[in-house]
Length: 237
Ligand code: NAP
Image (cartoon, rainbow, N blue to C red):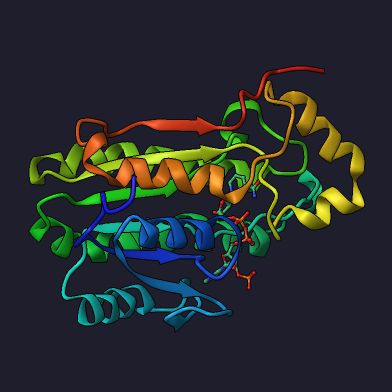
């Protein structure tokens, strides 16, 4: 449905790769103007979202470029398989810095602009790790569950400004993040394919299309929700 985001202005982080890239492309195709951020790649601004003060700077740049902000999608994230015994403090801090605190700061700093939008939208990216748990992903799972919790509380607070906040929780998606694990551990890839009722890995576009829907007027009465977009992942062994 081309044009449904005509006139909307969006900021997407992690937009140089995988899911974030697909989201930026889909929002653009639907008519939004999109300011893209990533560590590297073809984006409007290369930045590490965990740097001190960077989120306010990114919001300022996006607002300067777009004339305001209606949509924020903090998609930048890291994973990292690590046995529990290897969960050193620095490792856990880094996972939470990127996956939780940078997300919260970006939304916090975007809020004054979203309040001015007639249709403010926040879409965070959680994970099915919240639902099933995954061996070796304890810090990651904790961080993604934190994203869901923060999104619900944000939704409760910003609804009075007409802003919605939802958390999209992908299953196993074929991206540069998962590619090394799927190559090194083919049995892990098979596990996820078998777990999905639809019998395949997700593609970044499977996620991006739902994000675009959540950003659209069609989703105007949906807020504070977590949505699993995982091909019907089941607890199968
Ligand atoms: P991806 O292809 O690795 O994309 C993530 C992007 O975020 C990368 O370009 C990465 O840059 C960037 N990034 C990482 N740390 C950053 C930082 N500090 N500052 C700025 N950018 C940073 O992975 P993806 O699979 O698309 O993941 C996107 C989101 O979906 C993540 O939040 C992830 O947790 C979530 N997710 C993914 C899956 C999946 O199966 N793929 C499932 C559930 C949830 P570099 O590549 O340069 O590090």
